[in-house]
Image 1 (cartoon, rainbow, N blue to C red):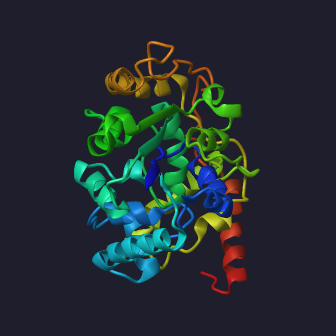
Image 2: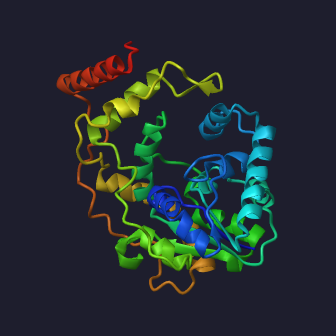
Length: 341
């Protein structure tokens, strides 16, 4: 059996890719390609939650265990058994797995080894497809997703040591050590380098799926400046995880406010984005030299920061009217749900 393993990275159109794959499940099956249903998630979150090992405070793992009502050992057994049953039932010749948390959560050699064992290695052929995005752009987009998931923190922090999340060389090296250097298939998340300027179409071509993707609407849009600011304040007061459990007092706050004050996302100042990006010069050079040596430019990513304003608006405070609009939305949503607070 062959394996196509799509590991993200996060913030590179993974939700759209996964929705297209789920919608194409029957067409893929006709070509001998299994995009498994596993325990019911569209994006194979089960794979990362099971392979990461015990993580007491990981929100993804906590939510998955709460959703299924299983402890971690039973959850791992259930994922493995479900995958084996689907492979046996379909007789597929290729297993296709997609989950962006294989980038952020599987951050040790041991976790990638657990992933390989969970999927049933060895395989005849393995392709690990990974989309790479310039770190400042990833961080700006990640900030929105983090807030939706109950997180907090600065949009563009500074570190003394590059976090593994933002290290493309370390990421690809971990997977190369387990699946082999030849398995690594990096793609740059830049519109002019994607097939048809579209990451979904590019993935279907890169993975050699032999079918065209269905038309999809844009998934997981970014929060507006006002929405992001409100959630940043709300999350600090009503966290998603309390005592290693999903906070029952939180409720579906994102669903309640997502239509309030829509608009462009918050952006940092150009100088701040450039200063942030300089932290990754070394790891980006290593990634290019080892995994993309024939790239037609001397750096892994371009150096165009013109999309950022001279003065950022990511920390602009909310007005009284904006606060009132969000309060109204929360009240109305709670009333309609039958549980006003």
